[in-house]
Amino acid sequence: MSQPLPATNTGPRQPGQAVFDDLELFQTWDRDYYHPLARPLYDRLVQRMVWYLACPPGQTILDAGCGPGEHSIRVAREGYHVQALDISATVLEEARRRAQAAGVEDRITFLQGDLTRLNLSNESCQAIFSWGVIIHIRPIEKALDELVRVLRPKGRLALYVTNKAALDHWILRAGRRILGKTPVPSYLLPMGRGCWHETGADRLWVWHIHIPALIEYLEGRNMTLVARTGGQFTELQRRVNGALRSAMLWGNRAYNRLHLPARFCADNLLVFEKHA
Ligand SMILES: C[S@@+](CC[C@H](N)C(=O)[O-])C[C@H]1O[C@@H](n2cnc3c(N)ncnc32)[C@H](O)[C@@H]1O
Image 1: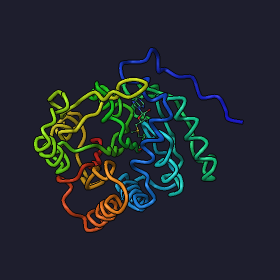
Image 2: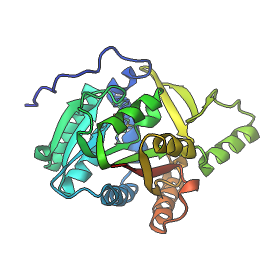
Image 3: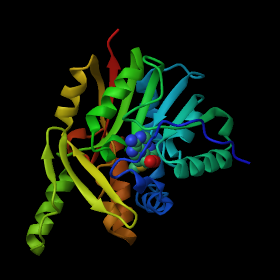
């Protein structure tokens, strides 16, 4: 039997938050991102991230926006205790189920909460990661301020984010122009280009992050960038099937293994340290 989740401070839903109560969205993401050929890339990236977080095993790491718990489970397997936080009770139940199946439930604490108003004390976290989460938060600066607030001095924060400068976006724009398709309406804002995607349940906000602006924002808030590395080289594999998809997934792994430049990748992993 699952335990009730701790009291929440999620409050009334903001625009674009109800979408995360739809488990079908996460099933689509499982298919898009967690293909068996992609898993070794995530295993390596999470190990690299944990190394950059420089937190001794046995300590607690906050997974801010854990979703179905894929990376909480990986980090728990590295010997850490994980505080897995998400805004969606539905997906937290799914994360708990997956942690149980993986045999690491005793190393993960589940917590419902909103990144834009975390119910955690100031400077209470030694290490935090947030994987593919702030890219879905329209008031992104609020979430960043909260992550910095709860991080201890000398603590580290890892962010896995989309990259507005990725080759993917050039290819997609060129493809649309050639096919005579109208561009998707989007907003060019200081933190990147953002747009709303209609889903069955609600609208989903997606940022393509202007990474220099994100770095500058955090550097203005007592943080220093300590590492930047590429994630998936291309996300276009989501749009194709069969041998072409497999070839792209192998390509993503090879690009990452060779440590090729992060600036062309669809996703980047950034690690920051808070000043003492
Ligand atoms: C794309 S999923 C990523 C999940 C997981 N980190 C992964 O990489 O598999 C984004 C997650 O962020 C959560 N999320 C979105 N907005 C949030 C907010 N304001 N506070 C906390 N979690 C949020 C969603 O519920 C969802 O689980």
